[in-house]
Image 1: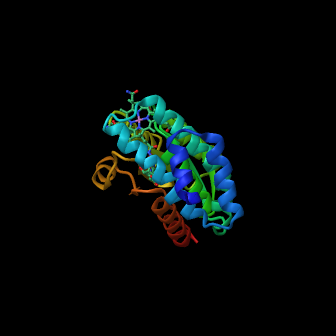
Image 2 (image 1 turned 90 degrees about the vertical axis):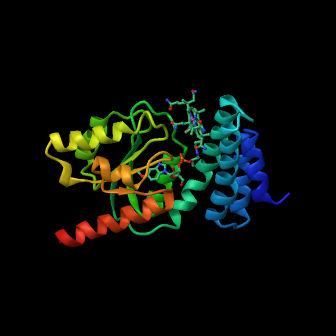
Length: 217
Ligand code: B1M
């Protein structure tokens, strides 16, 4: 079986150590890190996602697959970062309060690092004010929020509202993403950008920061 397909298969079986080893092997064989990500790790996780939706697998299987994906990502991350560009700005990122999904958020982190951002990752279950406090502490350019549950999407609105209440709304670029989020929701809550995937999140963040810095220069 081709190495990339094997990574996808082993991820679906939750074999974290094997996934990690095969990702390393693929890198050693000079395979494209983006191909390993998209056709190996992401493809495997998407298959598990579809099976979960159809009740073909359940939470424990999804959880071990997610762990295997994160194990592979730890090996891949330095390479994805390496192929990135010059530092462009600082981003605070997290999954919103009440939400524990972090795989997509971790991908956005990697892509942002790859685009040259200094990242302050607050992890999961992040309260609206915690995003803002960290952004203030590190003098960030961008606040990035991820949500995977329809029940936690409103926490994004809370963060934008708190920015307004604290007189800081214009200081930060606010970006949102995650499976249930879309453009019209971003517009509705007053976020600056919605992007559908990690790669476009990084591209958009970079363009937005350069635009702001250009304007202020
Ligand atoms: Co959860 N879960 N889950 N889950 N889970 C979903 C999201 C769900 C759609 C499954 C389903 O029913 N079909 C459903 C949500 C339904 C809804 O709200 N409409 C759901 C549910 C219901 C739940 C629980 C409530 C289940 C339960 O306990 N009964 C529970 C909630 C726990 C909580 O958060 N409080 C729960 C738990 C879990 C696990 C812990 C088992 C595990 C998470 C493990 C982890 O993340 N460490 C899990 C998983 C893995 C999933 C699915 C199967 C896969 C999510 C994932 O990682 N996808 C998911 C079903 C699905 O999506 N098909 C599901 C891969 C990842 C790469 O995609 O995160 O979408 P994603 O990220 C994408 C884009 O969205 C984007 O970039 C990435 C791609 O490049 N993106 C951004 C993400 N954030 C961004 C931010 C940006 C820009 C782009 O800018 C800032």
